[in-house]
Length: 84
Image (tube, rainbow, N blue to C red; front, side, top):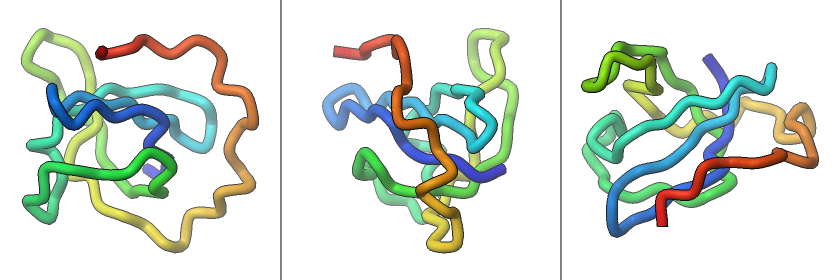
């Protein structure tokens, strides 16, 4: 899937990705495919949906994707759960 990081808290390692169709999926920094533990808000990414530790689906195998068209994302994200 293609999406964009809309929230990331480096202290907890938790973030949210919004797909191009508007679906939101949480992720933990351990799901970043390059082994890095940090990613900038606004980064376009490719990812898979995987089962999470609490029985919910989350984003996994996350990698930056330069081919995702940022203009295809919603300008207003509405309410996003904060991890802070």
